[in-house]
Image (cartoon, rainbow, N blue to C red; front, side, top):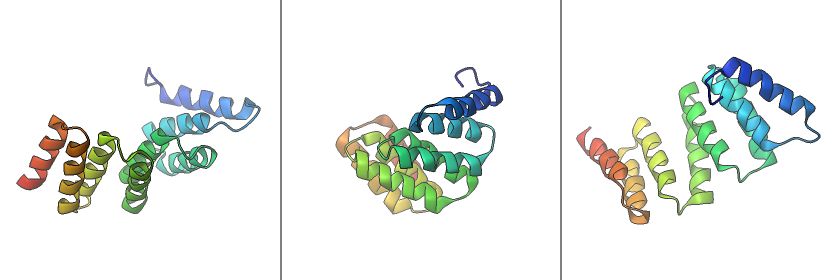
Amino acid sequence: MSQQEYPEALKEAIKAIKYADENIARDYFNKGVCETCLDMFKEALDDFDIALNLDPMLIDAYLLKGKTAYIYGDMNTAFECYQQMVTLCGNDFSIHIHAGNLLIISGAFQEAINAFDLANELKETELAHYQKAKVRFT
């Protein structure tokens, strides 16, 4: 995956799942990442679900599932993923920035501003201020 050879990486991820003694969340996560990069969004969402069923604390899976769902056009699932991330990692400012970005895209501008404000309360960053300014400009 790090060399962006996603078809080959997907084959290896499938083998990792096949030959593992037990189901491992990270294996399904990696498969989902490859599938997302190959525009196999439905398959990726299914694999992220499996990963999260195996390890509900796998925050990266919520993030990538949310991004994949957004690309796939499933805003409800994308928003649910970010809500779950906020629930699990509410003290992480970057989670609120991701949530704010999703809210901008979905047209929920005041909610996006609130998310960026919360991010800045946790850790003031240029990005949160910049995104908030973009909302105010639109």
